[in-house]
Length: 547
Image (tube, rainbow, N blue to C red; front, top):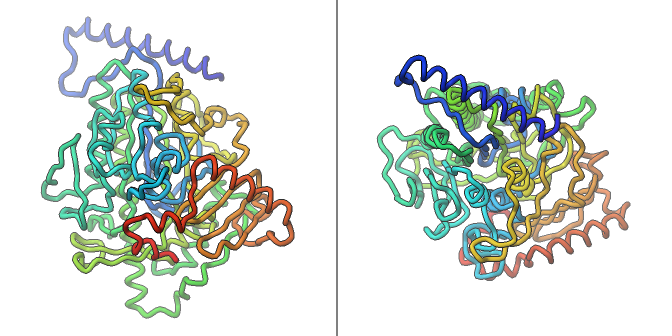
């Protein structure tokens, strides 16, 4: 069924719904006041819900092989589309900027993070020559709202309400907070106003519940709506409600490699991976489980149980949002997209001011490298680098008006494609100018052919740079080079999808071709040598954690 036929079918359905609703009101003389009014909009373009998880690995969801209970997301996946070759930008700020603008991070002024390095492309906020999905859709008749973590502009001039969102609840800065009081300088805001959370506040619940409230409000208007639901979960610090942690306590005492292998086998049974797909070698930094003391095993089990509880709580709230859409009669005409901003993280921070037991109010901790290695099954490495474990994300699309039954797609795609996809679905032309400012042309290519079950004419190449770490994928060839050594690594993903066999020495011509393509891209989008950025960045000390 073509997109035009789907639109015609939807228009007929909406007209029938309107007639039925008017008949009911005429016969009864009044609408039932006990329930929220059912939305019947004049505009038949789809609603759009974009859900982003934070620091979640490829295999954590149940529908991608994990043991964590995610029935809401599993439902979306089983009745929608799961992509297996979808890429993010390997880190939170760059991914968010790229996702929202349809540009590469450096083009959207997020070549590093939110710090202003006083260098072109490294300013730490979305500039005027890049517009967000919300700005584009708002000017094309959509209601817009955001709930969650912003992280693409600290100053109030760059908060969500200045970037196209009519409604906002969440963390305007960097998030990383669950129970109140928050660690560090995190604040929570409604609109442009900073607010103090009430007792028993838990950010995952609040972010989800505000999302449902915003959808309910927007559905009563005569326009389609766009919701950006950007979760903090499961980013550290590890904090979750006691009942959610209890579901998983003891689950992870089987050990790192047992859990990893079980996930790998489930991925094959689900169809995420082919039966002959390999798994990357265990990271040599992962200790042998049997070599750990009982106290060490208990600590690792607790950390992963809290991490799982954070994802579980996120999924519970997404389930409530789905229920809200169903009650409003909007689920079938809403495209829901879910992904993660990067792979699982090996970061291991502590905070002496947050010294409560792991998981509780006032605690601070990470789930550490061994569990991140499990999260990214079957791939290697982590958030921050350009290896598959750092840049590959689960990508779920649920859109009953277009996607029938559950299916998989293995075509490569990138977060820059999300803006282009939503623009096409919303019948919105990406402008050359916005409020008298010339815009950087969009980089993304619509995913609509993939959603329709067709073959897409994809990108000639996909490229990455973050903190001096380089990567490129051109066809099945993948080049990776990491700061500061910059050793060339070349992989043929059709034969070696987990990047286990470096063929740089045996394929020198292919290596030079892909490096030249990366350099051409880097020059075009404004990538600067990382050492130059380091000299300009005001907080150089914290950057050295990876090196």
